[in-house]
Image (cartoon, rainbow, N blue to C red):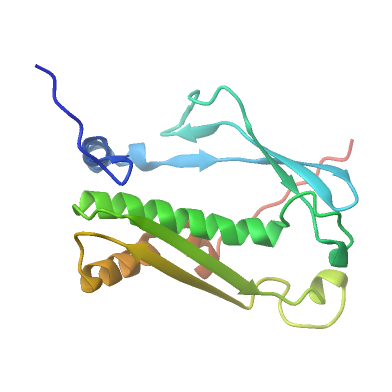
Length: 188
């Protein structure tokens, strides 16, 4: 007789716990290298491709097709709105990461989520990007607001989970702490 998987918030809790136990037993299983390719089209329009990644030193082959992203600027920044701009995608990455962390960790704790939404916004001054004096070229502040509904969790449980998700979010960590960025150039 087969076992039935425990699914909560769309997360297979048994697989989640097995994954955690596997990485706990072999920390190398927690090592990933993700990659993306961006190809300039014209003006401020770029096309991004995301396909493979490396897990524990081995290429992952679970994706048969790449994810395509269109990136552009709004007309006020000389673009044509063919897609979100890079800083909007960065904000979305934080929202995605928070949502994944919240849903998965809620599932592991036995918390059912009826609805979950993150609104993320950031303040940026483009003067340095344009070669003008001004504050740093990146965001000077980022704010995230979560809205969650749960039929079986207290406000205190949801609040603690929100703090935990912030503390363990890889994207938030990249934004809040310096990360070395190395750029090389091939002239063709």
